[in-house]
Image 1: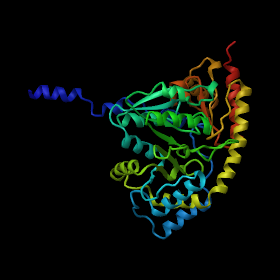
Image 2: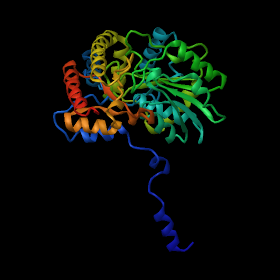
Image 3: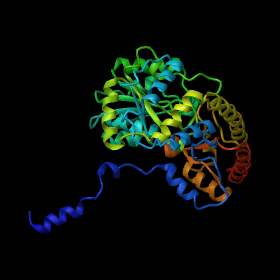
Image 4: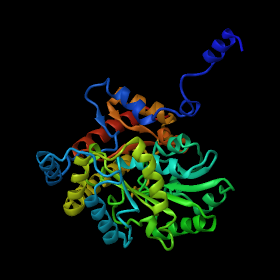
Length: 399
């Protein structure tokens, strides 16, 4: 090859990976860049509790810093946190995980999901998941060389993924099913019976189930069913959980994975070369959260429930039909009656009325015609946002 043609060949090659270029930037983050440039906005946007982490949890971390706990921990996480987590999973779901080989502490559930995908997928393996779903599900599968297979869900079925729809998409390349209930962005919760039907599909086809249960403690008038606790599912479930939402610990970045020892060993191998360990300060705080945080959760859930009822009724009264979310802290109203796309609605609402919501399309194609409204903000802000929304919808009503 001549020098010139060699240079020509180099020029045509992008400096970055094809896999990365195929992935869209997060629709949520893109929208919040726009938000940052406008003053006086009421945000129903970022999925983050408006509470500070409870004081006793912060205090535990402060005390550990005063004692000089600023070092690396085991790749798996501190033995104390793993012991406490093992107890928690036993007490809550009657699941017995060995703290030395079946639990891994991660930097939030986001890292746990990334590790799980990289640990189980070979290039071309397929992962079935609902649409809409959390923004990182699809990209994490793609970055691991996998192929996301989307299953449409809709408001008529309360955004619950159907076992029959999953089964119809199983091929010889299907490796797993990725679900997250209670769901972000819809607030949907699935009953134990319906999850058992998904477990039956997984067992029949020998599939892994990756179950993101970060919102497990945030349910209203229903019970959360842990997927790994379903009959015969512990060994073939990768259970993902964390502290961000229920304990108001988003910035601490502590999550976990619970799975069989083979999967945890593979995930740990990647984790030790890329992340080493989760920060020790966050791990200390998480121990305190597990030991003494239940009352804080109950208090927050009661308040979220109050807000949930206000926002859902308010949206329906305005003429933005909204099914009743039974978990997490999101409402997912339909804006189809306005004739606008989700993105157009969100951008115009932000500019004209200074209310931030997230376009449903940030969560998948089936999110078109919807917006996500997070009600983890004060009741006063929710009520003001609803009055601005009413003004906006009335102004743009199609005659």
